Image (cartoon, rainbow, N blue to C red):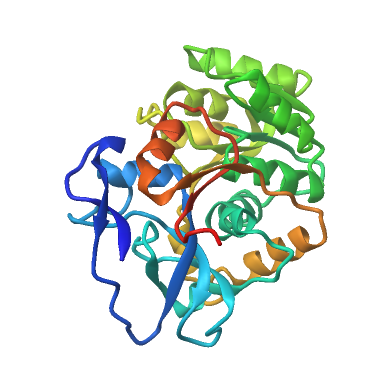
Length: 328
């Protein structure tokens, strides 16, 4: 089968087209003939082995696919699947049976790929990690990206009083505003935590914020934490800058009644209910036209390298997709 393989760690240049044997069927897994695969920022961490789960060479990247199930309860049906250990950049992939969800025609490949990893991450960040409440103010960093663009929409639907988006270009900020953000600002031009704090407070009409979804790291994390109101909650789910923030002494959290939560979707996957509740609600919202995942561009499978380059240069918005199966 055609695939994209990593045989050495590095940047986008290590993504190489390859001919590989198809995956071997296993009990508890579903074999999927892949039509489309999703591309995530976490994939760029996998290629240089800087992600939470360490990689073993060689490997095929890719965390989610849309295609036709060849085994399992949904055999013969179009499905979206989250892959437990990669393998999505290929013509066939194996997915844990509990992470395979049937699709209806109203849900496009790009929308489905947006939901199964990034959408469920946004859902859990707001529902589980920060417990968003009606009337809360919410900062969504990287609001034009896959997680951020969905989080902005969910926060509005779930009663946030003010949604503040951050994005690095005017076009991205305009997108965030069109998705429902009340304000959109640029923290990429800042160089200190104080600048970030003041920018976020100003965007919240001079007040501290209640919730922050943070995935940048460095001084952006530090400033976001400083902008939290008492009893405010910050959820960190990425380190896009690859720069660690300052350490957070417990006494500083106590003195301000602020909370910091880490989030990795794999821990939600391992809960008894898995991703079922999140996917059920997200798919329902898409079918009803109340949630509109943002399609960010489609690349041929052999050009996965170009997709990663676009992600790393912050040149993308929404969900990036690899077209795996030939179009009829």
